[in-house]
Length: 471
Image (cartoon, rainbow, N blue to C red):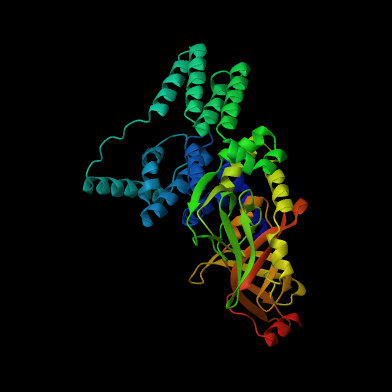
């Protein structure tokens, strides 16, 4: 029952992120949101947290009275937690909605809010006013010229002058393209639909100009370095990947990524070379050197930690693709991730080298053990954060794995690096408790959304304890 509840919450949050704010009518979801938002912020995922907050604010203005009531309670509790964490950067954005909540309590078409909600909202506003009074007034920020022009264009469209607005928006897109600002160029191109959904010529023409300019922005040298990759993709796909990357430079002997790191970046070596090494106990083993035109990123496609260290051998330039960058491109070009994964699997031999040299994670013999177990995500102090159940798959002296259902693949990454408390039922109504860290989450049965989760124990088991569990 608890597992179904967790699945329902996960699905509700995913739907909410997609803009379906009606899911706030579900009290279980609206109550879970404030804590979820704070955890996302703690885990360096502020964009997702802010998107959830935006949906709550939308719910505050919905026609459904119950949705407005649930949104008010959820937003107030979120603001209260932000104040406790001294996160005024996000909390400042909620002050206007908090004022609306205070006024909402007297609205005839809204169910009466709990006194605590109104009192909390009012107290937060007083706290914000007191804090503002203590701080010197900041000079007014200069308005972004691009944003100002964009606003003017849409004011023009609102007055009914759509043809002129369309022309000005097209010119603004071309201006961005000339400045190599492809992110804003593509964003503005999508906004042509808002002025005229049938403006197909402008939409097609601006798209062609963007792609042509993207191709021209890639130097002949870069095309030679990445010729194999370029041949695997269409021009649009290659451009999407290339322009989603950021370049970094590493000095000789500088570590790019270390064994044990939680890093979901994909590294494209433009110039220079890296050495890949593995630390086994007190010894360091050399795996291979990687050169320009090669890719490294074992954690990019699967939620896992790095099993090797990459170090620059000389001055090295690397283009870095973050997973969130690829996901944005995947929305425009479905199947892009699958093609990139296939290319990586065919061209990278790091994993096979680890296995050949006996350096993979499985340092201990694993014993198959199918058993229903209780699991808790815990904080550093050992306090439970959430609970769920899983199907234990195998166990060894150093860790165990279990199967769990996760409705959305991207959510599987949220488990990586988490501290887990596993309660294993034993014979004679006994239980054995094991604590460890999630080091890998990978697909087990995609049609059923099943994932295998691998835990490394904080303290290695002794053989007698392992045999007791296996009995």
